[in-house]
Image 1 (tube, rainbow, N blue to C red):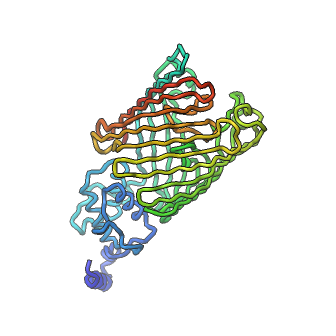
Image 2 (cartoon, one colour):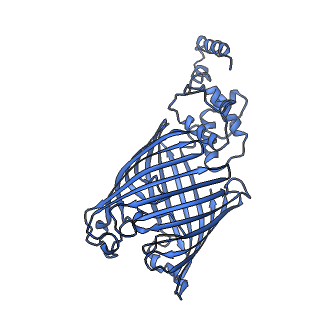
Image 3 (cartoon, rainbow, N blue to C red):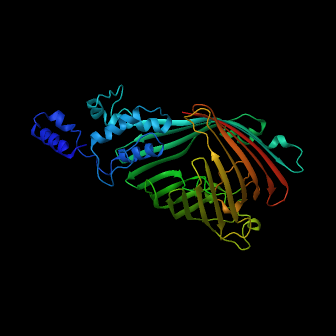
Length: 430
């Protein structure tokens, strides 16, 4: 916009300040640099929903006006969005409703404070069939269950939100007897406060680790400080707290629950440069009572420590093809202490776009003691770990409905017996 025009209009608004209502909603006032709208627009830009200026930038680090922000929101409102993106567009529309109205964009049924609490989640059906060489009764190794997951987010102010995750499982096969006490129960898996200040994020409560996609798919109670720029650059994270029953230690089943809690810390740095990204992190655990450990499968000498170093990264060859992997090693374990994976991905199902799909092939080698908790489905850490190949794919059957299929073929690291795993899941996202 012409700077002289902006200056003239701003002067006119100041002179006409007797109209206090209009002055209070001055569309030419800056949006503060730490306003949540910048992060929201950045996320929408990354998802291809919204654009900044013609060159897709925000003109360096300068603040932009509410009028300029409203122009971008107006364009976003013309796009078909769903899920998180739709929630961000609705929230931006509520925040800049007056400016949008001045632009002739009517925002119906939106109040600035109407979206203080938002709910998202999934309903999923999972079937899994696990087969081991020499095994006759394969029915005892099936998983057949329904899960509903709710993820509410409550806005406290422009910087802070309270987030949670609630899960409820229903088991559909005879093997669910072992889980009978959990049948139908709603479990509070996560609850935490999250503060966003520019590129900095603070978390307090019970939340997931930054490596829940590789070796630490678990929630812990504690605090985290993270720095991550919106685009290319160096990122950093550090967290500390308490963790229950870490899978990195092979404990006897009769251990007291109080003895299963461990102190937990992690720290790491990462970087992204165009199509290349990577990170190096260290995870540390120690517990006050390790008498129940099976040291024959962990370490030659007793230890109350686990120190796992993780290196992970990836490269996107094109919009559709990418390669990613990780390597982890527990330096306090003597057995089954290494884990690694290399995966080649092609495209991927997009929940908002019916008919989109993706496929992958991977080789994985998972020693149990290299994990805090595993997120993997078909080559996994059952017994003391497995190694082998995985192939899989996903498909958007309908909008917000994803079908995922996986097949794993490998060997048990402890027994060297052949293992096969069939996995299917349907997710209904809302």
